[in-house]
Each structure stands twice: as C-alpha cells, then as structure tokens.
Amino acid sequence: MICLWFSIFTNKYLLDMKKSFYIICSLTLIWNIVGVINYLGFVYMSNEAFKALPGDMQLYIETRPSWVTGAFALAVFSGTIGNIGLLIRKKWANLLLIISLITIVIQTFYNFFIQDIVQIPNSEVAISVLIVLVAVFLVIYSQKINK
Image 1 (tube, rainbow, N blue to C red):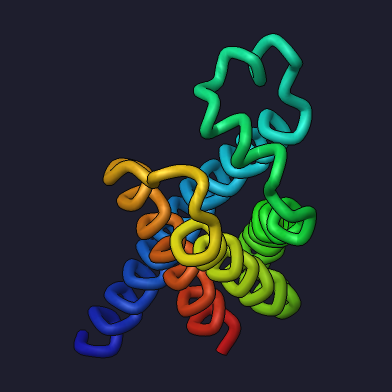
Image 2 (image 1 turned 180 degrees about the vertical axis):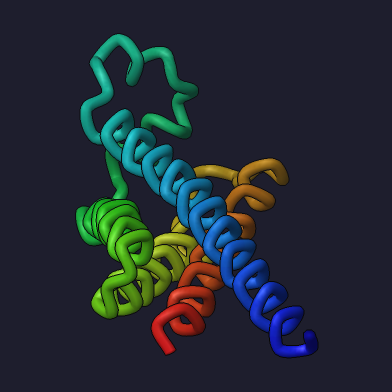
C-alpha cells in the first residue's frame, strides 16, 4: 500500500514538474522573442520613426558604439536560442544563456554608467532590472535542469 502511494505521488510529482518546466520555458521563450523583436525594431527603424524620436534619443542612437548594439544582438539571439535549447533539454543551452546574461549586463552597464546623453526614466530602470533578473533566473534554472 505504501509503495503504491509512493509511486503515485512520485509520478504525479514528475508530471507536475514537467508541466511547470514547459510553462516556464514557454513564457521565457516568449519573453526572449519579444527581445528579438525589440532589437530588430531598433536596428531596422525607419527614418520617419527615427525623426519622431526626441532629439536626445536620436543623439543617443547616432552615437551609440557598435559594440553596444552587438551586445544587444548577442543577448537577444543567444537568449532565444538558449531558451529553445533549454526547452528541448540540451546541455549547450546553459552556455548560451550565460552568454546572454553577460551581454545583457554589458549593455545595461553602458546604458546606466557610461553614456550620458539620455536620462534614463524610472520605468526603463525597472525594465532593465527585470531583464537582468529573468536572465539570471534562466541561467540558474538551466543549470538545475541539466544536473
């Protein structure tokens, strides 16, 4: 009787774990795809959209070093591919998620501590912190999953 209960509990626990795994991976994959869309919108911004931006934002975009844009690209694409790898349970996913985290930190450091063209509003600070926290979560979660 105890063995039967234990096997039912264990199987139910594993099923719940699988459900939560797919929910977490799906939500974070959507999060990363939104990052890719944001990057593509930034890189392929039309002249009309660019001219509609405030002057200080235009100056920020024009003077932004290419390595920051490269860090942005590497962050969103390695995060998205790493998330897909996590979803299909590949060990290399962790490496891509670590690369994504590092490049997110580099880009965030530039935006907050190096550039002095644009004053960052509080809402952008909150979003930037959230982006870093999600990236840290994904790295830790992928390490746990791959054990």
